[in-house]
Image 1 (cartoon, rainbow, N blue to C red):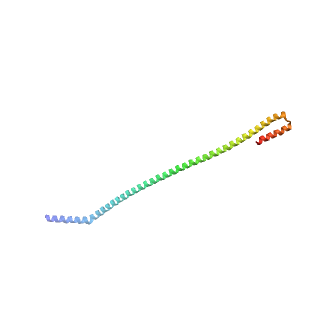
Image 2 (image 1 turned 30 degrees about the vertical axis):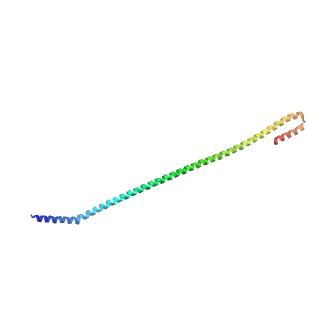
Image 3 (image 1 turned 60 degrees about the vertical axis):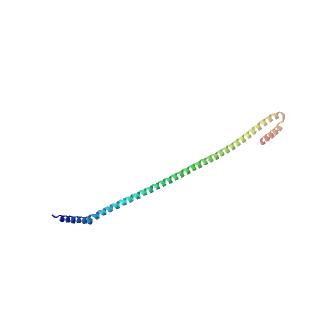
Length: 159
């Protein structure tokens, strides 16, 4: 065995192995590596987009929450205002009803006072007529007596 022949045959075998690897093994490995790199890059880009979209969604949620709180505050303010208006309206209605009741009561009192005065006047007239009748029975005849009584009764009824 010759060392030169062994070295040359090993170099030739190695060259053939390298050529075969470069021609048939290396391209599929490079394609697999490139596809893997592309998949990883796409995954990282999708992750970045997802993170960005998450931040945007979080910001939108915060904005919507703030808007909802503002709307709730507005609704509460409107409800308080309406409640105040209802209370004022109820107070006004109660005052009007009270005034109406008071004026009705005053009219009733005025009517009762007038009726009482009228009854008192009629009673006083009857008493005066009865008293005058007793006095006149002793001093005047019946015809003059009736004329005087009618005159007194008429004066008391009118005055």
